[in-house]
Image (cartoon, rainbow, N blue to C red; front, top):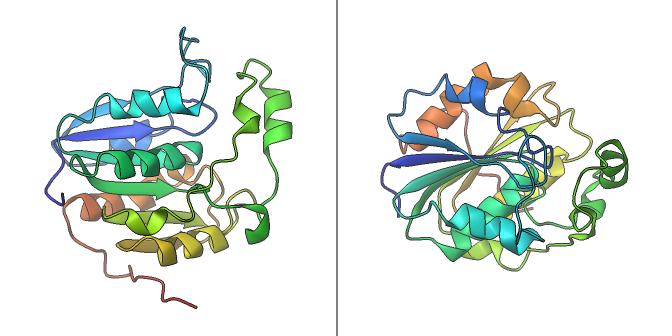
Length: 215
């Protein structure tokens, strides 16, 4: 499905910050309903009985996919967005993936390991969080959804090489790299990203966008 979305579903990263996408959302002219999802047990979202792993988080993402939706996702949320697009291609009209692993093996792409330090500074996180080793490499060519990839060239946790690999594996993906952008690209550069996302949601491609050719 490639029509206009009726709902925008914003997914945070592992911080679980449901306000992460607010500055960018306010810059979008799209009339679609907006919904900011939180992860139970992460950030400002209280734990919920029965949410004990990433399969349960995926179920939360799938729940509102009952109409044409665009998924706008940061970091960990990007992995769940891709899994949702694979599970519900009928209802996912657009993907916007920002500084995510995309379910790729990150070490071989030069990414710094962040989970141990992040978990130590956020002791309230569920204990299953750091153990996840989702690998979507073999499934990504099956994602039919038009995908906008947004990366910063100063992000040690998801370097540009990750975005470049995703642009090769995803059949309908375009990559934009923001100079000086860090891992919180969507929050710190909302004014620069909003026009790119608006064009993508309108089924238009920004003039600077170009698919990354295979190596």
